[in-house]
Image (cartoon, rainbow, N blue to C red; front, top):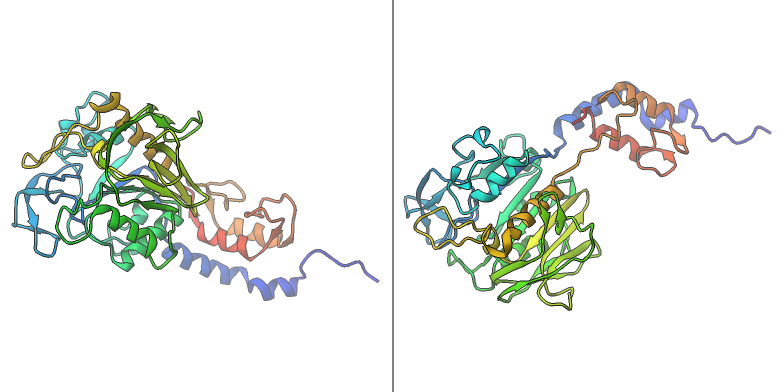
Length: 391
């Protein structure tokens, strides 16, 4: 009797994978339709009334001609609030190491300028912009960015928008969520930022309590030194420097309910899981950071009609700015091209051929992309999803 072979016969292999020609066609289809993530690009959302009332959570605005309509949405011609454009002006290419944050005009201009100095590109999703993921008809689809910043959104996201945001994170994107104290409904539509963000995480059509982050309905003003003690914590010990404190000016605390959720700063020495000020989590291939107060990111400049405060650089020895940059560096996606089996800088027919030739039980071979000691359909799917030039 012949010993049982661990290899898959040619006939069986054909029945499993059809033919190389067929898979080339599939690969082309996947390459054309699959959404991606674009590292080093940050998108600040301005579609959810982030400019209502005394808020000015924008990087830059050339005109100030919007106000809050009866629906709670921002309406052009209804007031003098900031109406941010997609690209900040003057051009980001003019920013040097010594450029002041007043180069741009917005309460988040310090954040934007600091990001550019770190090599990031910065854009705004302006009023009327669409929140999608994998929609090639949208020039500002989330797949064109690596980090999406939601600084105190005051309008509920639609089900489709929430699904897009969650899928963006799952695919490797970074999400920065910033809430504010309870009853901070700036546009008077019945929803404040913590309610909007809790609805995003709880009712998104993908998974309930998806990130293990819940904003509490409370309000605290305090300065905390209760930061994470680990010397490897990515938010407390990052490229911008060590963070020792955070000052809340009427902010909400956060409850951590997920196994992949971690605290960076807490309100008290108890470091309770339901009493954090800044937390971070992983979800799928992506990452999330959450803070319960918008004040730390306010640089005090921007819309002259608003009451803005210098939380970015003046408070707690500039630790707020350090925290924001450390968080963005951690959130920034790292794209791996694991499916480039022959390491020629692209996933192509040669890699597909190598995978098919290794089909079956396999220990330590390059085609075993998911490391389960077998080259199978899961590896094939991963290869097709990575089809094309490596980042």
